[in-house]
Image (cartoon, rainbow, N blue to C red):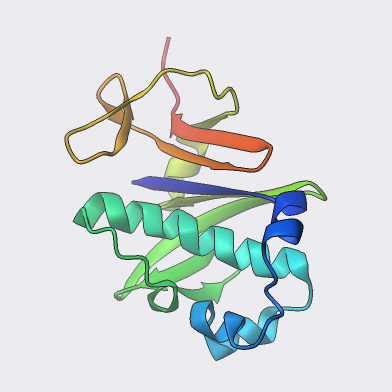
Length: 153
């Protein structure tokens, strides 16, 4: 299973003040807070948790976002309910895009699409699909990303 999240750093800087009192403690564990040294770190951790949440949501069909239950273990692994979730992130000065997978062998099989006009539909649970295959969609500010399995031709 896969999930993804994209953060427009310009939009995040305008719309969110992560430095306000108690904000970080509602989303990040003390260990995670100790990793934070700038805006990019905050939004990287956030995007990883969101990408993992999308996998959990698809697996459980429960829309309960509990960011403290998704925890940093290493730069490429987050944990939830005793399970490992693997992440890969692209971090630029403009955006952060994180992909999460239940198994790292999935990463080479995935492709990122950035064309928001790509047609997809939602299944009976409201989950995005293309050709009966699950996809993960994220959008924020100026950016849109869909992650799906590569098609073989």
